[in-house]
Length: 320
Image (cartoon, rainbow, N blue to C red; front, top):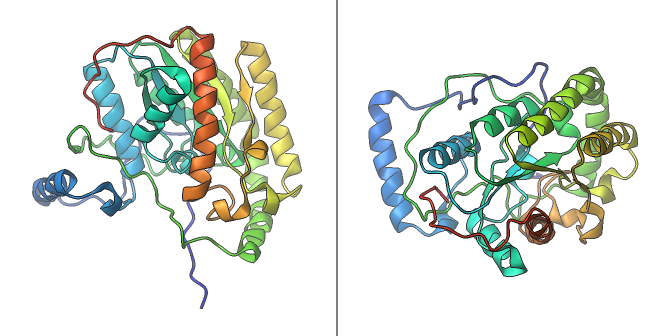
């Protein structure tokens, strides 16, 4: 029997909530302290490879990073990647990403992957508005799912204690050995056109307007927004999604031109193969290495353009 893999769904029918979504099932308050104590001990003693992704970890990470940056804003430039679960899966780890940016000539930066399940442009607005007023490059991830999704059900932002500085946030739900067959992937292509393309058409105009608002807010805060295409298994998708992809990509190019910002699309030029994807948009280990390498070079190019390289200061205490 073929092993089935649960795939993050980027779908919904209403704008993102004003507050960050929280997991739907949280442990009782009485048990939370004990659970967190155990988590802290494990984080301090276990190697990163033993970490397991749990539902809601990505959203908790977003909240933890924003809280830490707000408490003590860094003097180093900040880089944040926004997007849904495809963005979450396209960077190896934040410490490795930062080290690669530095190795490529970008200097010391605080780089964070804030991609999280079904993250909408409305959520991006909330995140950007909550970030501190420091030099920040905002990488806005793009794919068809960003025009169909609604984040998890709205709930009060949960302030969950996080592990000590230096621990590695395991953002990866998908790993080698879980890859769907090419046949199963092709079935997903057709399923998306039947189920989600109608949603895409209904929600496109509203989401396109939110994207422009997001760019505007970034610039008002003195940030440097960059539009970036997220990974896609082009070998399997082929031309099947030409209409929805053509629609949003044209809108993104127009928005980039109107606001004078970059629109980056390197997905088809970095040697991604179908075996680098667990499904159509979520990368596995080999794919993350390829995508992150090109993303790091993009970041360095923009840091230099904006005069942000070579700026260093004391590192702020944040969760890695």
